[in-house]
Structure formats: structure tokens, C-alpha cells
Length: 380
Image (cartoon, rainbow, N blue to C red; front, side):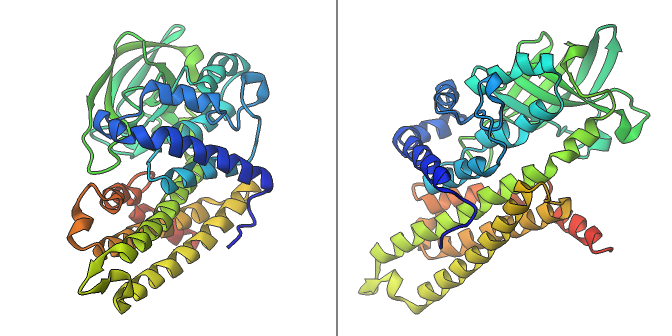
């Protein structure tokens, strides 16, 4: 079914991205999984193709495209190619809006060209060992000392953490002011006192960099603060809708890809003198999955259209994330069942898809948090 969201120019862009992923990334993806992250060359090559600065103004080396739809294509094509590029989404979908919205002219001139060229990788450091993602319970402190802040604390579950050069870090500048005491500092990877901890071993998403970070008397210039002091909570919540929409795009694309790979598998898998595809149960299961994916796509495309118009609400974003991530879990599980024992073997893409899917219902707000947000929109 033709999707009305995309133009002929989008189709051309999709072909470029698809070629890049399948010809250059797929052959080396298994090496990324062993290393736990993509190599630096990936970021430079993505920059060469203009993938890192789609929304960045041309003056700073970007494409100057305001639309989010090219980002959607990056994610959909990664799932179609069977590779997970969560670190890329963190850089483009999650971190880049902070550098575009909350920076001064001087900060833009300093950071945006590096982010667009692949010379700098971005990360967002919120979660802490003792607080999770509860922003009001953060304990990382930043104490003003003249033209600097002295930062002490630790962060965990940080995507791009072991490679990032520019880390947007949530800190408490006034511990007695609640949410109004939260600020954002851009901590640079080579600042003395900043250390990267162990690379975290995950159930899935093996090629996605995830690390612990620590800060010991790190001197961060006041000039590295995003926005005014005390507006960190407001900045973080303002981008949550796009962050959750980005995850929904990934989950929806992953579910669609699970069906495609499973249809191909059951057509070629022999059992009891025929193919697995010929069994009525197989047909019913895949038909049900296909119907669910179509429903998810309709909901997602409606949310994307609203986002393009600047009309996507927090409750709408929560609803699409809830639906598409839960859909991903159901569809991948039902598809895996059709593989029998082979579905439990990591050499099969469906097994990796199963492991990769689980965290979608946890990060950027768990399914339970999404339900709370939706319930509030109902007046409950």
C-alpha cells in the first residue's frame, strides 16, 4: 500500500540509504556486534552521504530540511536490512534537536559542523544508577565556580556512551529547587575527570554502544550550558514526543521485517512432507500478524503527519509508542514460533529480532508510563 507521507524525493533518498546499508553496512555488521559498537568509519561515511545533519541548517554543513521523514527512512531501511542502528537514531533523532533548539549562535558554530561531519558523536546522559530515568531524583551535581561548573556524579545505560564526544548531561545545579534545579551541560569527551566505565552487556542490540559514565571534579565551562540554568527539565520533556515517535518507527519497521523474513522462511522449510507455509496455522498466524502491522502503520503514519505539522501531543506520542512497541513484541514472538527450534538460534535473524525487541517497551518511558500519560489525557 502506497504511503501518502512520502514524495518522489523521499523515494530517491530511500534508495540511496538502502544501497548504503545493504552494500556497506550489512557485510560488516557481525563485526560490530562483536565489538559492541560501530567503528568510527561508520560515522564518517554516514556524514559523507549527508545522513547526520538532515535538519541542520546549510550554514553549518547540513541539509536544512525541517521534515522528520528522512529520519524515518533511515530507521525503516535499517530494519529492512536486518541491522539495528540505535546509535544513529540517538545522534540524529534524540540529541540533534537539543543542539538546534537550545544553543547560542556561538555554540552552534562550535558544535554543529562537528556533529554533521562525523567528527563528533552525540549522547544524552540522563539515567543514573540510583535514580533510573526519574529526573527529580538525579544526584549528579554541578556547582558553579566562576566561569565553570564542577561536575560530580555518574550515569548509566548511556547509548553512544563509550564513543560520544559531546554528551548532553542532566545535572542538578540547585538540589533544593526540584525540577527547576535541573540544567543541561554539554560535557566533552576529553575533559579531565570524565571517565567511561565498562561497556554494558545487553540481551540484544549487540552492535549498539551502551556504557556507564562517571564525573569527578570535571570543570565544564558555563559556555557549555544549554539554555538558562534551571530549564533542563523543560528542555528534556520538550523532545520526548519525537524520541518516543522515533522508537515507534523502529518497532513498527521491525515488526514488518519479522513478517517478511518469516514468510520467506516458512515457504522453504519442509516438515511432514510439505512446507511449513502450507499449514493452516502458519497462514492464520501470519495473516493475523499482517493485519496488526497494517493497523500499527496507520496509527504511526497518522502520528508522523501530526508531527510534521507540529501538532503531535505527548499523549499521542505515548499512544503510538505503546501500541507499536507492544505490537513488535507480539509479532516477533509469533513469528519466532513458526521457526520451531531454529527460531532460538542466533544465526537466524528472527532470534536476534526477538532479543532486540524487548527493550523497546522499557526505554524512553516504559509501557506502564505510557499508559499513565494516556490515562491522564482521558481525565483519569
